[in-house]
Amino acid sequence: MAYTQPRIVVDPPGPKAQAWIQRDESMLSPSLTRSSQLVGLRAEGVFVEDVDGNIFLDFGSGIAVTGLGHRHPDVIAAVKKQLDQLIFVNSLDYFTVPQVEYAEMLFKVTPGNFRKRVFYCNSGSEAIDTAIKMAKWHTRRAYGIGYINGFHGRTIGAVSFTTTGAPARRGFAPMYPIGHFVPYPYCYRCLFNREYPSCDLYCMNYLTDIMLKKITPADEVAFILVEPIQGAGGYIVPPKEFLPRLQQICRDQGILLILDEVQSGFGRTGKMFASQAFGIEPDIMAVSKALAHGLPAGAAIARAEVMNWEPGAHEGTLNGGPVIMEAAKAVLQVIAKEKLLKKSAEQGAYLKDQLLQLQKRYPLIGDVRGLGLMVGIELIKDSRKTPALKERNKLLDEAFKRGLLLLGAGESSIRLAPPLIITREQIDIGLSIIEDCLKRITSGR
Image (cartoon, rainbow, N blue to C red):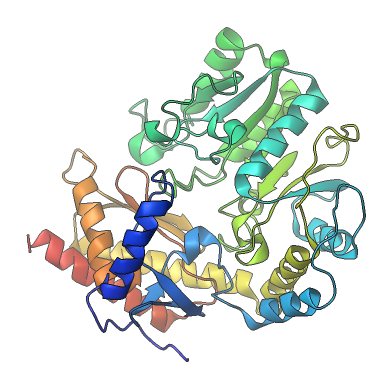
């Protein structure tokens, strides 16, 4: 079925969706958070159809997973071909061709011209845990430093550095007992009440003058873990000089810089990886989400000399299976063939510009920020920037009822991450729905 625009045939969630939701709620973990009451049945391109026949325009890509759009034919073909040849062979004990072929492709597009190695895994959380263990093994240092408002996953190592909200951490102490935290340059809500650029990134002084001098000695810090753009924290884009300065601090102190590119990778920002937009070369980089077009996959890519642990130090039975690797190879091929980096940059600039125009008409929009098709809008109640959580949630709900899938982030932000293949016309459809929702919310209806 060819989808051309959103279409609501029954108020969502419809009767079939409600029935499935009830069955889900009786059997699945209650820890799962759900942005909308979508029960997806099929999808194509930038559209998703639910079990009641409603068609939604997808402005979230499953949290930046389906960057090529849903069910890209090249990826589907690659997966089907591999299914007919070899589904699985244990990569702990044996070798497979697709793992090597993908590594060769991946190293060409990741930042840095140095020699690299890769460890494959099944998720972003696993990629972060891998990076943490690798950094500790290589440096033989005890501690790691993360950033306030950062999100890195739910496994015990990753969640030890996740600080987007108390629910992710409540009840799980003691966590990985090595973590310390410093402020991220969230300039719209500066913890130090400074203004950029006159502040000269004052928040970095906390890292150099407090953390590394008074809390944990620099020579005992194995790594600093950071998102180049904070994802679940609100799509927060740091000033351009932040990451280069952080990289220099790490190099001066012998600390490994780990970049979490799980959400910002594979063309999302208009570059293959966000680190390339800031001109830095991390020592270790964690990736996942868009890596294999929705199949469970993650990877930690590192300088070859950093990934020097001994056999048996870190393994995983299902890591990097042949089907997943073929899907991942196809993703890189499609990005190149369809010039999706250029499209992401161009369409993202258009999306951001149109949102800035909306901001002029609706004071509820306090901030618009982003790179490429990784764009965030933050909603506020007043000139004091009081977070508009109720209004944000209302906007998500109203958009869903009109056929637009949006995702929340931070305290009162919305993250827009449509597939990289989205057209300007489709962006306009989504923006029209967003404005209609803003009108209803601000008018009190």
